[in-house]
Image (cartoon, rainbow, N blue to C red):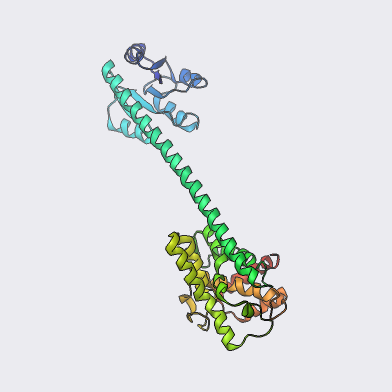
Length: 350
């Protein structure tokens, strides 16, 4: 049985309200707001019928105190009042009262209004609970999808890495570098509007697939200890478009566009150069997707400071010098400036 507080300093109103409601509800009749607040320490009502014109604490002040306390803020309140002016109603609704019942009231009218409002509260509560359940389910599904995406990108990335004998942990490190750059760019307002539209939690695992196309490149070329011939380099360059094709095929099968679209974008653009001399499409400047321009610095930095079949690792300082020299040629100048400010964080990545 639902519980109702009736708060009114007029005893006749309390008697009438109790007579009208007590057959269907557990009714507490209270002569003042002070008594109501004392009872609220032990009893939580489903509805409060609150008189406005009361001594000491009037209805408006009592409602204000109710709403200020998180424990009581969600209890629905209906005002009992002999005032029917619009100012009183507007003020009451602004404060959060759910309805007004005009005095003098009849028992049947009071009972009918209370029934309707409590039924409405039940509907709202049920739909809120349903929405919360659906939100929780969606969150669980999202978390499951993220775990699946991370697992898929890790497995495929590891498959690529195992084919290059001296590129171990390249994908892990470049993911970390990219995350450092993204956070630094946001903090400094560099391409901030575009980056804010991205889902960083999806992008970081997605870029692990940037070299996926190397799966189709022969081990002889990937692990060649010397300088590549022109023909061999042309074959290496194919990994960008081949990566796009593989990811496109996955998109067609899975329909998971957001995660894989980021992966495809990065795979196809991280070897483009600011001056247009990169591959696979020779894009220039702002025509290169921003994600590819950011990834270019992360990818090249790691290549410079790592042992490769064709070279020994450069020092951190030499890598910084090379990237600075390529500012405006290979790399977006604004991103290079950010990189220089956070390059000490790159040096700490293992």
